[in-house]
Length: 293
Image: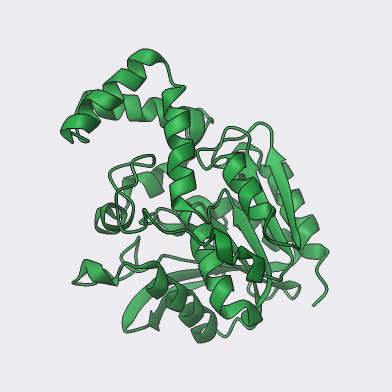
């Protein structure tokens, strides 16, 4: 990761959140980044710091209970609604002004939820392999799962039926899904491995579930599809051709946000910012540069 110009803790809604700022003196605009999971850390988003070389200030933080941020005593704090207020708190406490907001994966869902409430504080919205409808995403992930080799699929079903998600044989089968639909690079980037190894289980298990394609947590019924028309911002939607949050999910968002542009990365799964890094940064840079606010 590029060395941060500034890092520390900011207090938001009574808890300390860890943040990093890259390109602090840059003048073209601020890109505020929302990591996925829910329960990941910001570290795997490190390629986005490349945008500092194009004049943008890039701000990342660990959401509540994630990474280096404070862990609350009660899992009831882990909600989308509170996450939205947390984004607003970080923006306000760090005096970022109007920002370009990018959310990856679950962070894309959070970015959409934020835009639906605080649109006036945004210059633009970037939804990177993100979702608006969890039910649609679950349906698509089940389809992808069924397209795995039969022996892998059978192992997944066998252990899911008895709820044994930690079984080594099951975990090995999960890895097949991840290497096909989450990150196709070999080996996986260090920052991504760090995020996987430091995944916050209290957050992930509460909101999501035991793995990427078994969404049984509190977000499982979330669906903002019918609200998307309210977003009237320049919006970039990116997705990998082999993404676990599939192009169909991206298309459903694109169809409903009037000022949106959809870009499919043909050689990527869920981490296009890593898998096609140079091309990804060029697409994001061109989008940001086109916005006159």
